[in-house]
Image 1 (tube, one colour):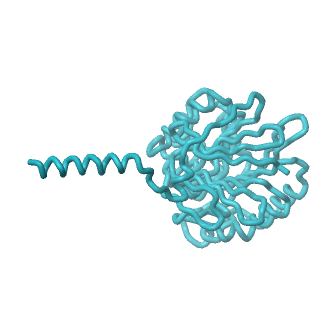
Image 2: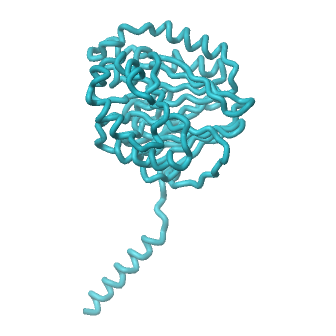
Length: 322
């Protein structure tokens, strides 16, 4: 009996010790704690979400619900979607039921009834991409005017931001050589790159923020870096001093920057189905959780926050346009 009591005492002591000794965290885990955000009275706010079109299933609806709650607090002026708006096979037409099941009935909080500026992802290219453009004539909030386009927004009386929305699947050779992407061959990739060069070269705005579906840099083991984007888009971002490139495709949160360069690369593909994250030489932060990104312009600074589906701020990026 005494032996049994000694074993019990030993086990209790061992479990107690394990509870008070902190677990050693990996680099990715150590950055996953929540943070406190300063509230700004005057700011330009918008959300970025990607890879969300799952008919409300997986984590899409819980992310949408939290977006609505957060939108009630900060009142975003608009929302950007970085593609894969409709998973599996895109949409067939402007009357496709997926518009109701994956968009209208999911992001239904009144605070989300603002303009949405989407780009196309590879899954969108499995369907009718022109239908996603034409839906802008049906919906009061869907604002996709072309395969690629721009928007200029005022931050304050003296500072403006140029937002550039790219059509990345046609820029990537893979989608031209394998079947299942009928609209890719109809796009002129060289013309888009010339357009991007001209837009950036002629920009007078202090902020230059670029959005696309495919990453330039990504540490994810699912997709990772996109060589065609590194070759075609990255040199223009650097040449014309763009500050941010936002994307999805890899289903995690990432912040990356090349050593000695000024472009921040943000992966925010967690709108419906998060996948395991990882880190590499360009990584500053990486984490897996369903969620979206919240962007705030205030004066000459910007703040990008990774928000999870519980409304917790996981990580923030802050910088000036200079």
